[in-house]
Every structure is written in structure tokens, then in C-alpha cells.
Image (cartoon, rainbow, N blue to C red; front, side, top):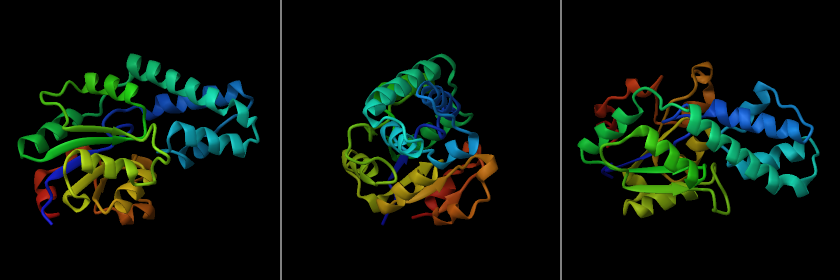
Length: 219
């Protein structure tokens, strides 16, 4: 089936926001009496904040009645930090504009709340807006469940088999593949050679490594 649609993840792919989510998460858990190390944090990259909190509140046996409050604290902290200090990755704006100029429909499928999406889009300063924005914020399940990708394809009037997703996280890749989309992953350098990326259709070192011909070869 002809590829005509490109859907982008956001955090960790288009904007260098993961350090600020990590700061917000660690600070919030410390407030509730738990300490998270780097290896532990990497285990849950890509989850929605609600699911992230649920996982670590269970792990550290924290008071679950405080989970909704903790979720809101992290989100507000992250939005503030990213709004003040977050920067798009080199090539983020270029890659979106390149696929748009080639006639591909473009969308965003993120686990983050739409309030943060608006902050990030302002930083990207696109010449042409994305055709659809979808968030897993209010869905029953976030990534690795495919619903946010399926919703984005529907909003773009595209069949999943006509879509390519760009992802940086394992959970995001699983979500895209579960939606029956092609998936291009751009992992963190320290994780680039991990075998878990074998499910991807293409692995790139960074956004600048992308060539439009690579999309055409997926047809």
C-alpha cells in the first residue's frame, strides 16, 4: 500500500524534553519519599505520566491516593521546565517541512498533554502546521497501546498501512507497529545498538540522517 502519511512522536524525538520530564519525575517522587536512579527511569520512558506514576507508586509502595496529585505535579513541572529551557533537536523543523513539501500528510501522536504540545509547536516554528494533533492524555490506554496512532491516522483520513511513524522510545515503537504502521526509530546514542530495535523498519542515528528516499523505499 502506498505510504502517504508521516506521524511524529514528540518528546525525545522532536524536542529534547526527556531531561526535563526526568527532572520533574524525580523531584516529584522525592517529594513523596522515593528516589529514582537513571537506570530505573529508562525502564519507563514513553509511558504517559499517569501510567508512569502508577508504575513507580506500586514499585515504591507509595500511597496510591496521592497518585492523581503527583501526576498533575509532574505535568505542570515538565511544562514549565520545557517551556523555559527545552529546545528542538537539530533537524526537527527541517524533517517535518521536508515531508510536507513532498506531499505527505503529517501528524503528531504523543503521550504528552495537549498543553505541552502547544508549547513545543511554538518552539518548532513551522512554516506549515501539522495536519493533525493527537494525544493519549485522555485515552483509556497510552503507548504501547496503539490507540493514539490509530486516532491520528483516522484524523488524517489515512489507513494505518499508509503511515510511517517516527519514534524514539521502545513503547512508542511497539505502539506504532501494533497499529500496523511502518516505524522509523531514532534511539538515544547509548541505546542505539540494543536488539529491541529490531522490530523497527529503519533505525537512524539522528534526524539529520533521514533522507526522503528512505520513505520512498518503504512503499
